[in-house]
Structure formats: structure tokens, C-alpha cells
Image (cartoon, rainbow, N blue to C red; front, side, top):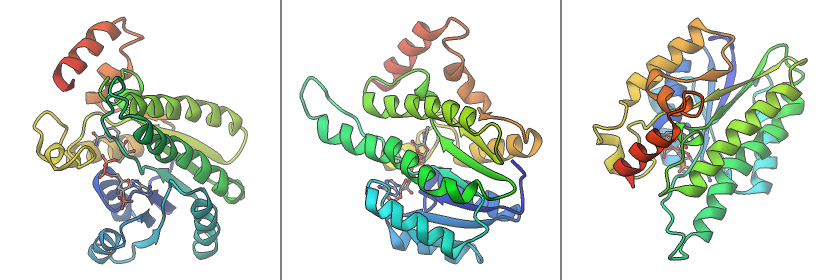
Length: 251
Ligand SMILES: NC(=O)c1ccc[n+]([C@@H]2O[C@H](COP(=O)([O-])OP(=O)(O)OC[C@H]3O[C@@H](n4cnc5c(N)ncnc54)[C@H](OP(=O)(O)O)[C@@H]3O)[C@@H](O)[C@H]2O)c1
């Protein structure tokens, strides 16, 4: 992916990793459009970053995604990249049967959302000379957190879907890049996560991602150093040990 001169739509760009990437890529000379459900949150980010634009989107809503994609392409005809970043992460207690509503909204948001939005934007992206679909998976795609089984499953699915999509698009102008964050200081699990010393500081994560994007423009996966033990656990034969350690800490 070239680091500047793109028009990039970032779902969930009002907070956390999405906002940090939006601001980092804005500073590099890209046109940035952030999307999410909370208008006030989006407005605060665009006010702080002149030139950045926002659009309302509920990625759980199939009809909303279709209308949103049509409007985004009409409003930003140079749109050539989408970062499928919006996501939710909620603990589930399966034996207590409190899980089904959470499982369904997690799959709708984290898995169906990116699939629906990418599919809706793809006809437009395929007409661009250079285009990029970015997905945001997680280290938990590779070693699941037992407390959030559906979340971990959606991230494993996004990893797999990204590989399949990349193969389907290999002879086109559209590249597919997966970003797999480790545990990062955002409010994904609540305010405590943003100050959890065990989580990677958000600025450190974003800087490392930006450096990889800039120095390795052909990279298909963006894996920061902190995520490598999870990403390569199976390959290095350390899955059982990493799984036990992860779930002892966070279980
Ligand atoms: N932080 C971590 O430790 C970590 C690790 C691995 C992967 N990730 C992934 O990184 C991505 C960003 O998460 P984050 O950590 O930055 O947490 P965050 O600050 O909570 O960001 C999530 C964003 O998704 C948006 N969103 C949620 N549901 C949505 C919906 N139905 N429609 C539209 N937007 C929606 C939220 O905006 P609204 O509420 O305004 O809609 C919010 O801006 C997620 O995919 C997450 O799974 C995070």
C-alpha cells in the first residue's frame, strides 16, 4: 500500500485504534473519512483534524451498509481504501447461557460487517488504479481468549477470509492487508483497558503499524513485535503454552 495520496474510509474511526490510524494516515497526506454510530465522537475527531470527514454507519445493519456504501462512493469518488476496523468484544458465559445475544451481535459487527461493507465497495474499488482492503483481526485470531469465544472466532474468521479474498483479487488492482493487533490500550473492553499496563500503549502500536506500512509496502499482514508470540504460536509449537498463559492472565 502506498502511504499517501489515498482516500481512506475507516470504520470505527472515532475512537481507539481506528482514530489513531485515522490521525496517523491523515498526517501522511491521505484523505480520511471516519465512520461509526456516535456522531458526537466522530465530530470531535473531525474538529481536531481539519480536512477529515465523517459519516454515520451502523455496521450491524445490512440495509444501512448498502446505503452507506452508495453514499460514500458518491461523496468520495476517489475512495480507494477501506479499513474494516469497527468491532466489539464482550465476555460470554456459555454454561450460564448468557451468550447468544452477544454471539449474534459480535458476528454481525466483526464478521458480517466487514464482509458486507467490502462486498458493497468492491465494484468501486476494482475501478481504481490502486486500491486496498484492510481488515483488522487480532492476536486472538491465532490463540483464543476463552472468556470471549465468539470474539476470538470472528477474528480467526476474518484472518481466513482475508487470505481467501487476497487470493480472489490477486490479479486485480485491489490488495488485501490484515492488521492483527495485540492487546492495546483502548476502551474496547471498557475504560480500564485504556490504562491497563499489560496492554500496549496505543501510540506505540500505531507508530509500529505506520512504520511497517511505510517500510514494507508489500506486506500482506501487519504484525507488530508484541503480537508475534500469538501470531506464530502454532507454527513455533508453543500454542498450548501461549494459550495457557493468555487464559491464566485474562481468564
Ligand atoms: N484494543 C485491542 O486490544 C485490540 C486487539 C486486537 C484487535 N482489536 C480490534 O481493533 C478494532 C478497534 O477496536 P479498539 O480497540 O480501537 O476499540 P474501540 O475504541 O472500542 O473501537 C471500536 C470502534 O468500533 C465502532 N463500532 C462498534 N460497533 C459498531 C457498529 N455497529 N457500527 C459502526 N461502528 C461500530 C465504535 O464506534 P461507535 O461506538 O461510535 O459505533 C468504535 O469507534 C476492533 O476490530 C478490535 O476488535 C483491538
